Length: 384
Image (cartoon, rainbow, N blue to C red; front, side, top):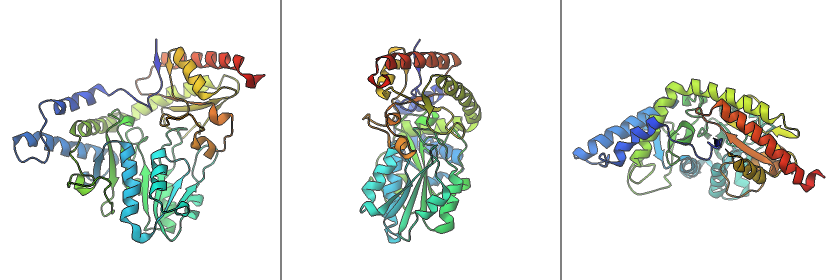
């Protein structure tokens, strides 16, 4: 029996989400902007999806901008907010454990190395509000904060971090990356106090090409994609209606089911962590508590992460080598940010669960992990 524990890389659609989007791949093909009969159903579906996503985070529907996925939403947030607020300055502050799309966008949008400050984290990936406050400058225009870290699973106290920014610079625009948490854990924009927030489809069972950016009313944003006036002028181009409908339905389902889903994943996650840590010289990366419900990342001493991933695949267990977002196999910056050094930085694997994961799959993964680590260590020159 194959065991799939790589849901952060790709996850199956919720059948209810698939059913909701299917009409817009067939007969409901009209443009939401059309004035004739064919546009009425799509227009209503677009409005409904916008309201569903807004309800999930306690926002007004007009505050939601749909994108082609969380990566585009992150790029739009960083580049669009910085471009629209040049009068404040060109400086951005971000945590050292942001998603690669956030960090790459910050570096791309910054005029030079002096215009980006990366705030360090502790050994479990947490951002200290005092450190964040000290990183702010007179010319700081944007602060980017991750809510749920995609590799080591750390869930930040985003509200405390936003409050730390407001205490020093009330006018600075704050973006929270909630692509891993919205729909999985309760997220409310008024509670967080942020100006912008990224949501993603995969975390809640929608397609990976479905995403959205929340903008607090009055927040200035320059579009990345220019042309028409779709999405309030913030993102030009015809809306991907099947993806948007899917995201809306996934948000609706998540709003009512996330509590039970999260509790189930936490139970299985904790069992998985306990089982993996019975193997000698294995460490958990990130906190034991206050972590994403379905995320487990461990480093196995004297074993290379990619080799371990392949060894597990040969045993029918699908995982990722350290991160689900990188094409290369270099040391993950996140692991370096929490103070790990080689060989730990190169020996990590990421196991991600879904609410559909079963107990017997977790037990099979634990057994396969112990067997694979033992076999690889037997042939490793590093173990002597």
